[in-house]
Length: 585
Ligand code: SF4
Image (cartoon, rainbow, N blue to C red; front, side):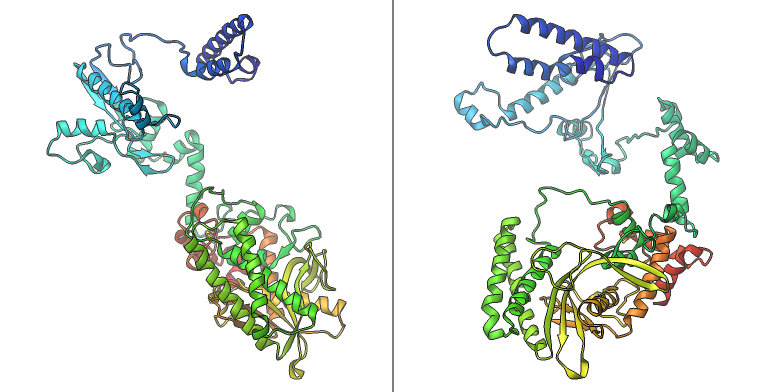
């Protein structure tokens, strides 16, 4: 009672009547409960549950000059000259059969033919509808909604609508052809002609959409502020200026500047995301927007590419750590069984975490994982002729479980990207080997890649800033080695290593001078961040295909084309660095 009397919203006269009726009903219930004996809780709950649907307020019979609304199963008795029946789409009427899960239809039939079944219920509804039509003497207008506004999906008419249509148009077009059927009249929120308008909003919409009046923008601004902002943003995005609607949100007091003390901590992934599409960086790392989970979505695959990749990383790490602890180098003949048994343990765990959707999906993935393990072992034996694994999964600025090496640190690493400008970096280095080749002394940093090689194969390994790991990890690992291992230690090379069925053991090694160029790119990206510039990518084909924000951006081709227009406009000085990255690199 307190909830209804004190907390429920009551904004107008109708609400007040409803509240009063509910309170009276609750008082009656209270009085009855005081005198009742035995277990009455379930009866009270049932009563309360049904009460909002059962109560009627301000009810009245049909009156002259008024529209009278009634339920389809109880209306049509007042002999009106005009009857409008709405809601005749196939979802709504006669509705889906509602089967009693406790006593199924065929069980009911076996008990007694007189017991109601779901199909009988639908039949009765249709018969009641036919009787409703049969007793009409005036005009009858049947209608259904042919568009679901929430999903922007087409709806079909109900079977009774279709039957009525066929009766009057035995040789004409099908009613299901909806908007394409000229004989069916479609109406919407902007009625035409003007005389059919009922509300002020409809009148404005009719004027705006029907007549394209010169004062359209003023009308939008005054009466439809949300549409007005949408109109503004569309115009701004279509222009060649870089505006706040395109990701130009300003420096916000340095909130996005990673070069200040207390500014955001960076990682390779963050920087590469920014270089790929600053707008996706904004969504992911500033707004922290995540795609809603879709529970129950059955997929044909077992593990996602990312999950499979991280399981393989785990297998490689365990295997190499074991060999390092034993002081041995990998040998295919000797270690094949051990590597596959580590893989098997990992697969068993993955099965417990994510049961496979089907055995065929499971076996398909197992074959790929086993092939990756075989490729890895062969490659490791070959590499062991010229290098020795020294460190695996080095954590920088991150917590690490298990034993720590001299290179692991929970604090971030500070990098000087240009004289006097520093950023803080965190990350995980998959592998650091030491070269045993006298002609090329030093350390080799490897990053396992379990996906495709496309991004790394072009002439420019940086790929317009989309690949920065080789430069950043070379600089970070070199600094750590000098501090913790030996002052003269140097990183001889960095390589992307593809021990997977797709990559077939390919190793792509970076040029020695990558650190300087990497710093130049990172520095340019940081200046864009500092100014609060987050434009969309200008290359939808390259960057949008697997982007988790594609649904937010909508027409990504248009978004990228518009971004290119702004990047090309020299007057947009705040985009100078992005222009340089996209046009020069
Ligand atoms: S869909 Fe394309 S434009 Fe949109 S955020 Fe992702 S990469 Fe950027």
